[in-house]
Image (cartoon, rainbow, N blue to C red; front, side, top):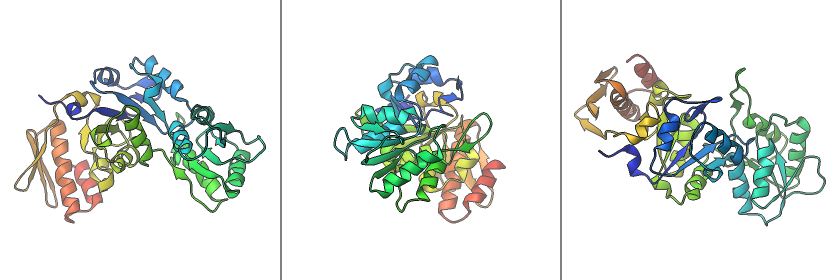
Length: 325
């Protein structure tokens, strides 16, 4: 039996909704990750925590990993900037502690908004303590010619009390006061995924990315040239996948991370039918599915995506048909 992961040399994994949910590890996630025969890089758009903090959290759940296998958007931003400015360059760090720590580890000199003197760049990431004065200092530096790098553009941040403004909202506030756009390195932009593959010496085409969000995890990895797996333990489910635009469609759909070490049936056509394993599906203006389990879901997605691409149904039709199957 050929397992899904056997076709790849490395795995890039999102965190929340894939490995953890809040303060708890998701069911089967720890054992599944620890059983993989390839290196795993954990990626997160959360710029406020350092890689060592994320690594400690993962090890606390029982995942065998090291800090150098954790890629935060702050780390990616610092690495991206270090490629184009001289070592030791002063950089205004806006956000949580993770931003300044990653800049320092990349050989740059982080400056706070209270420090005097010019800076060559501004790196803006999320921080719960970011103030209007901090954003003002960023705008002043950018108008003076500093490069502007944003760790990510997530408009909201999930909390136990519901969504609150995320880094994308803070970036928008600065954007309203300047006449340029930032370079964004976090998901869904490709640089973070290319860097993740580079961390373990794997080719992008031989790296599988797994995530739970179509518009960030899947779209970003697809744009970088990776195959992708949507895991149904987080934000997006099969109805969302059915209505996804082509850049956001995953290569694989998994019920949980155990599927990485299981056989994944290839897609095939039999007349009007899309086939996966022992399941098949077809779509005209209705959706007909024969079979059960995840193979039936995969066959249904295949035929719905084909119908959308052929112009027979709309993406909203696909969502409705999947929801009512």
